[in-house]
Image 1: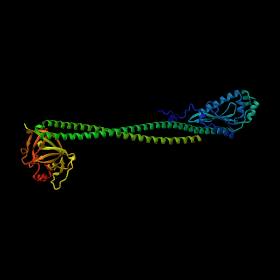
Image 2: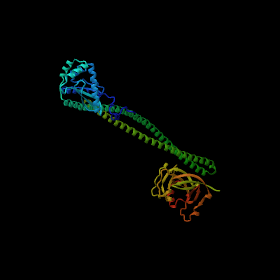
Image 3: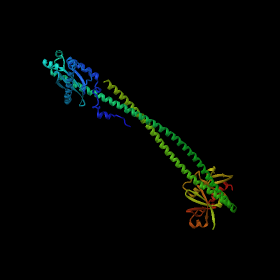
Image 4: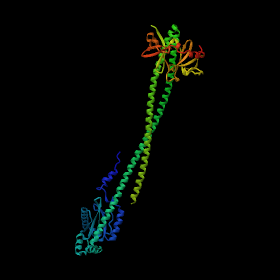
Length: 352
Length: 154
């Protein structure tokens, strides 16, 4: 009977990479905490997005420049989206972090989150100035996206400066971290899948075992009824045997009787002739009886042999049934052990 | 053509016959208690009480020199008369009473010139078997007769 998904399915196909979403694999709570502290400690804004570019957790340390002003404006937001996507594409092609200048003039990075050679999401971040900004350029952009240039410049000044190197290092760090996290999370995911399959399989095996145990019991009980019947046949055979013995004795006595009668008839001479004939008939009767007795004896012997054979087969069946029952018990015990192990494994995995 | 009625009996594979006129009756050995008589010859097994008469039992196996002389409990007693003396021959089984034509009988003197066993009357042919026909009158030796006579009641 098919067991549905098997462990082999999980191992060979892996997690269905096409359809699985990054939020199903990564521990988002943990990721959020890490991202927040990372961003705070390095002063680098960060956000994690899926393959569509949608954020899966809250962005950390986003600058007012980007959040309120640039993304706040319709045109600005549109440009940011294009920018993010392009950066994402670049990092997809290389599978490596990509540091670039965004449309608004800040230095950003895109660090791909890789799992088994495929990208499942991206950590975007940066919002750094690596050199003294060209104010005029920024004012121009502000006008283009419809933001008050003064406010824009003011927000710009709030942005921390950092060297390009440190941005690259930050991107690399996030890339390594994300990669490791996704690897670990995925292993846990796989493990959970396997444990579920194991659980289902064991349940089915246990159900099968129960069925087997039930049928073993039936075989046993049938065998016992059979044994009772065999006993009956045996007893009847014995009784028939006794009767046959008795008949044999009578036949033998009849023989002697016939012989003695013939002897007496011979002594009586002519007077005994008639009686002599009778005596001969008696002798014939006894010899016929003997023949019949022999046939019956043979018959009984055959019955006895059949009964013995049946008893042997019965004993064999009983043994098989008992062995089966014992085997079933052993298997059931093993299954319980494995189930317990699987439970423990589940607890370990979930505690990670 | 004279036809004799012969009582046929068997010891091991060998078949013997006694004329019916010398036969008194047949019994099962196991129906009787054999009483041992001390100082009797080896062939005499003992005596039994048959309907009031005392009949000595004679072991033909010993007489005829069979290797196995032990008595089987299924043996039969062929009661014969030998010169007015009733004795019981212990045999394996009394097979039948047959009619044997005189022509089928060859007298012992015709066949064996050195035979010392006078009690063999002759050899009879019946179906494809050879029967040793016995003469009960001559089967007991004088010595045996002397021992048996006082035991038996006529």
